[in-house]
Image (cartoon, rainbow, N blue to C red; front, side, top):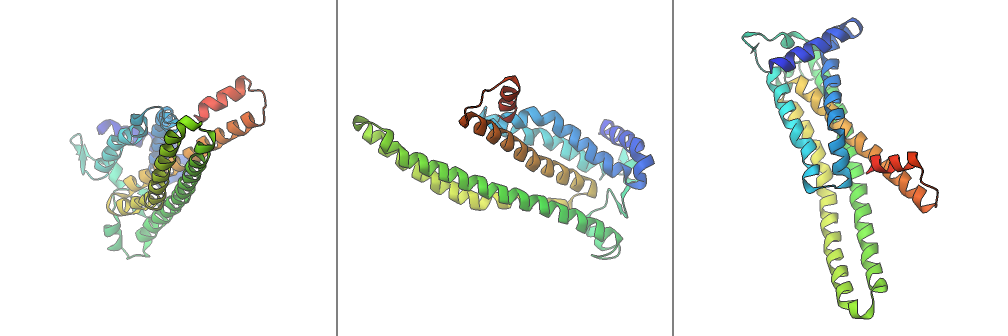
Length: 250
């Protein structure tokens, strides 16, 4: 953990001439971005569904970082010395402060309370964005499954009618599962709000940054994939640059 605190403190010192007392908060955001950049190849593999494990790896590899962030801004001492990070702030709120403590320092709309309200508002916007996109993706997947189920009997030969019917039945079950998951899973994005309310402000900043990155990353990968598909349907020649776009989108 001492390595982490030294790294964040060093980044904060680099940013201090520009951002003053909020430099360490910016350093946490920058550190999170660097972590997500390192994990981007795994996220890209998860997007294309390379392996079942690929979808879990980006999340699992971030857990140790989050826990280190949590302990770094919860511990009074690091390596036998006073934790220098606890004295740093985001505007009026110490990075080691929690929302419950902020409520006791001026109330909901006090200087510290307003910082947390801003954090919660930003997380809510990202969660709503993620929820909307999740519902659209689930609806699109269900529509694609319905189209495939309807086309199966037409494409199948007479001896394969039984297999086509089984495919249609399975697709119908998949549609129902997708419909249910599409209504529930996007709401899980708002669970980040609950976590941010009980962890130190610094950990809340990490959650906001990594969640926003995840949503933006999926938007970008989906855009690259759809652009490559449209180019393929239009019969355009796929050159070296386009092929690179297909690989990166997948």
